[in-house]
Length: 396
Ligand code: AMP
Image (tube, rainbow, N blue to C red):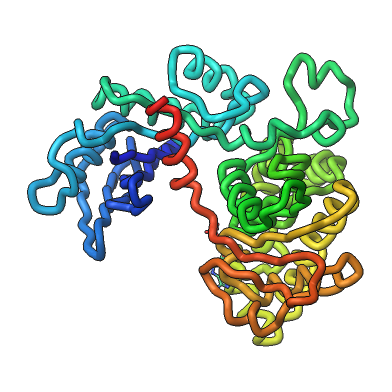
């Protein structure tokens, strides 16, 4: 069976066609600038690719071109839509109402709509993606996989903020957490590797956006992102956690609205702001190597912040069996992994330097044979997690 994975943004649409028998990627691509001048589709299959630049006024038109590309006489990988057994949609926010992946029906569409205030950029785009697919393939079963769902097992002590309760009850303000599909995939993989009934694991999803989760027996007990993905560790352009009074202070001094300040905290902060060079970790390392003091300091702030979360989660769980690194930085950058683990020997964390340095972009154990805590690198695969859920739910 072939499963199409859709990740719709406000003006973009990413897709992957997965053969679920052997879990291989048959084709994948990206449509950019939907509804604006310069719409473009980039389609990849095997080691070949092609581009199509035609106006696409909305997501339905974009989906039409995606299906045309998949069925193209010259570049296509399938002959008819009927070969696509199901579609899995990545959706940002399911709030407290959706705690697991689910077949899309009117109720699910209503819930995605209801949580637009909490996911104002993504939920409307995700709805557009679902509607576009329904329009061009009305008989294909569809599943929604939510970024927030995995974190719904957090207890109130982890998700409640210390503000008047009415804001939680009336407005739904609480920690939700994001990157849930990645954390869930990694939690599943590490649970298989540890092969024990009970486990306490910290998952470090460190990419342009970064989040950590504390997982007890494979379930989320806490996570670093909050009501929005702004909370937590320092990221590419996001500040991560700070004193909320900073918002008022900057707003008054710089004559900015709260929205403008929060925008700045999301888009002009993090590695980019502290290094005054780049939001990309590789550039920050290059800067530090060239002797740029701001870059060196940025790396310190970054690693110190991630390390504090690892320690806090070990304390919160009352122990630590494994740390897993994933996403762009976690999978590829041995220096970042080393700087996070440095000083955690007291928790029983002991890296094997040679193994850590040698590992890039693939799975492996990087702790020493004597380390009490296993340290793993496991590449994340959100699309595969979505495909597996889609298969499970549509073949029930
Ligand atoms: P992601 O959002 O998961 O795609 O991760 C993007 C981040 O991973 C960027 O900050 C990249 O600089 C970082 N990254 C990717 N490869 C490397 C590498 N070899 N060394 C350091 N950082 C890397």
